[in-house]
Length: 506
Ligand SMILES: Cc1cc2nc3c(=O)[nH]c(=O)nc-3n(C[C@H](O)[C@H](O)[C@H](O)COP(=O)(O)OP(=O)(O)OC[C@H]3O[C@@H](n4cnc5c(N)ncnc54)[C@H](O)[C@@H]3O)c2cc1C
Image (cartoon, rainbow, N blue to C red; front, top):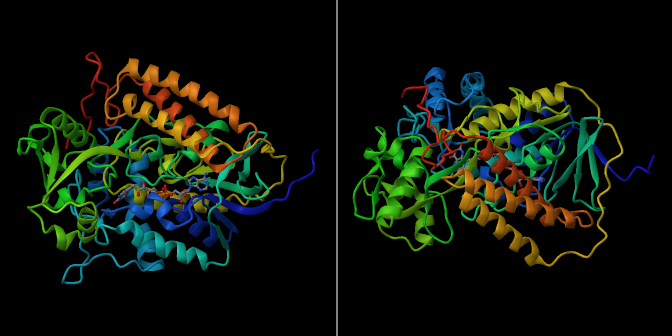
């Protein structure tokens, strides 16, 4: 047996510091586990959670109504059992963690009641928010709370590079801490690594959303599912630096106009601007193509007063009037590492939560403001399950990463990322066709082969992020290629592609 390298141990190891990872850490510590949370983030803003705008959905005392909306938005594809878990536990989780533990001051009306907002495809006002900058008002207090917790160690700027596996079980991760590849062994390892925005040239996500967890889990043999369902948000600013214009704007009354100045959403869906996201995103793309541009007209709402943070972003981008040019933009991955109702993956000792996981809640298309909620609910459930296993960390022989060759020039990763993003945009965007998907798969396979050759003897975070992006992109292409049915976010433009009718009437 080789000499054991320096290592750390934890009962529960959490990878990622968004809402999902934080919720796991909190609950596992409540169950008396010693928790280590590592994150490659150097500041809260490196997690999508910090960027969340519109808010967090509650059930507002009516789980069945929320369930109907989640199922309808998913085009009838969400798993009803998973949705039951989400809607049943929504209000208690928000009350317990966000209100009682963290004391988040969600916006209130003058009478002191919560100012519940409405967003697209929600039949009711049930979304708690702080201005349209909810994420940072949730995540920063959450991280502060964990920092002060004596059972939780948070290590920033520490990336997981690989899972440590032994005889089919996961025992922790290799990190990019010195010495390179330093392992952390754990009784339970929980991936909470967020989304995949960096796979596309235009995304609302932070740059570090490179699909690390999905790739690491898949390479270790874990099941993944629903990866073809990449959600594009209909209203990102149509400029060099896309930023999100929350669905809450339409919830309050903002409308689209095309290049001819005409409202058009009523021609696409009976719910017009409040139709499910995939429908609206495709309508916006079509109208942009046919009439040159689409703007979001915010003149019907009190934009500056109700949405000061978004109004400020607009001013920073030189936008003065009430008409904001918009275009669809990659936003969220509905699928991911396949998990059960406690976040357990198909691999012993490995859990996944948040955007990197596929719980079944979103099916082919996610309902607005349910991602923070899913991260919170599944985070608490997975934290409890991971701590409850009482498996002690075991030091096993971990693969030693080789870092023997000189570092690659910075432009290496940047060039490969550009190729990957172009391929994803051209063939795995809002609309796809089988030939394009097949061509993209071939390009991505070659790209992954090139990158693999470098990772054999080099261990930089950038290179591993590129490797993870390649693996995740390939998995998305494979899932898209294997699904001949247009549904939700997976829309095939081939004339003979079958389109399913929604199973759940709105
Ligand atoms: C602009 C924007 C607005 C949004 N608005 C809303 C909204 O209003 N309501 C809503 O419900 N949802 C919203 N969403 C979606 C929602 O914010 C995300 O889906 C959700 O926050 C994901 O949480 P998470 O904990 O899974 O991941 P994240 O919050 O993305 O956190 C992932 C963490 O993992 C870390 N990480 C990644 N890889 C590694 C690695 N290899 N090693 C160590 N650490 C790693 C990252 O640094 C990060 O800390 C929005 C998203 C965006 C981008």
